[in-house]
Length: 223
Image (cartoon, rainbow, N blue to C red; front, side, top):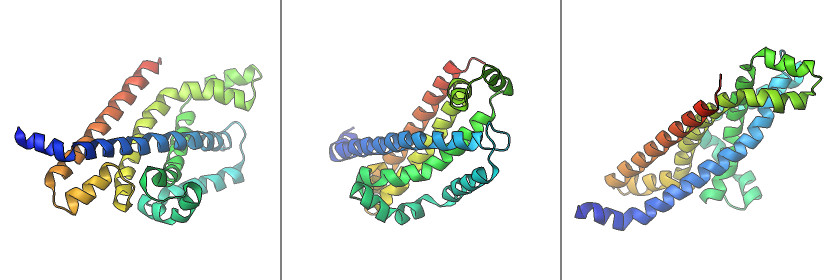
């Protein structure tokens, strides 16, 4: 009991701050990635060969850019974007310094999931909107996105968990958060308790994310 109290006394504030930093990186970057990824995903779907406004060359080029960005390992992307990150947010460390590369890494992933979710919408819903004379933006916002919402929410859990893993990687280069604590204390200082606790905290976060997204998805899925 006293050992646990000593541990909390020594590392409680550190772990709390690390958890707050990790959650800040996670939710800020994921929100921005979705703001960008939804737009790209909708454009990919609309301009696809079976989309509302097929544009073969444009779709192929955009798809190639998305795939190319997705193929770059996050740690390489993080380092490669350091000059741009410094110019944008005046730092490459801490929560603020890791958000831009997290967004760049996650947005293409989000875009492909949005595109896939929209492709799963029954054609009947689209044809009904087209029969009413709805414009393409109207079809997207009133028919496609609402119908695809349960699938999109399920995709949010995948994105959040993936980005959570990226934040742990970013901790190795000074981004802060639980990953930084695990590296600095658990690995470099051989403090096994810190390593175990940070891993457990990450597991708890993953379970909470998955359970919450599954609950929301089931509540809004009326099919």
